[in-house]
Length: 331
Image 1 (cartoon, rainbow, N blue to C red):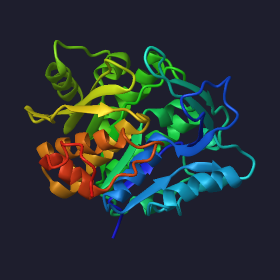
Image 2 (cartoon, one colour):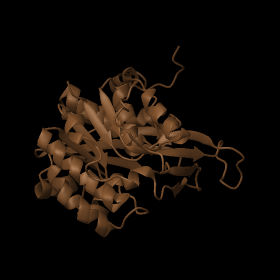
Image 3 (cartoon, rainbow, N blue to C red):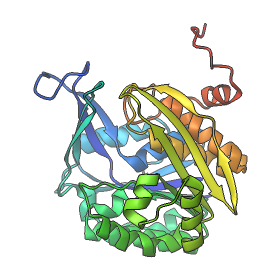
Image 4 (cartoon, rainbow, N blue to C red):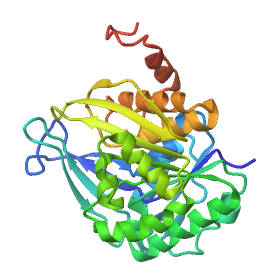
């Protein structure tokens, strides 16, 4: 029996000042582990999917802290590569409130995974029988060797018959739109489920439209994706957002309800949506249910500090059914 889901990418130590303090004010930092692909693996494990996470970490106490956070949730971390001569990436998050937005400072240069090369991970063994492989545009953006390693696993996953989901996740601090396009367009032939935003689609693919349906239709026509998932966020205030999900497949449109969310921590919100959609796609086998599950899971994640989705499947199911639209204490 293979895995339900295998993910691949960088995870970092996340440090954030408490109580909305600025970097210059704080005397301490709250520590979390955070990285798009590990966030997805953890969220999938919490939805009772058999998930594994592959990365390369510095073989030190910080790397062990990061690994342990994934293991706490039941993610298989046995395929992690360890490098005693490399570091783990770090990122700092300063949480704001309107009119001051959140700020992120990265310290990830020369991290262990940026040195990964094709051939280092035994993908043929790991992906044997795996239902779905997931990664994002952050991973190939880390270095040229990371891009090569990402293309390697996309090809192997496709050859193994695994479904491939890919979150565009454009990061302008890691690569240019031109560099992103040069990788992503060839990689798209291996992708079944594309997860993106209207903005990322415009930057990376150069595709625009009058509405989300037109954007998704153009992507599908050009690259043949099985499903295009677009997350929609309205940010009237830093701490109050509107959140919903849209999917397009085989000429049909699927839309989730729009959730009003109070944002305790939006980092990892998109990743929890990806995991919820993957659960709906693999287990519920219904795209409307997948869209509904992804949007509800993510809406709940926004209320939880940290990158990881400390959310129960039963909570998602109740929210979808409307039982928790009222906000009385759950006694």
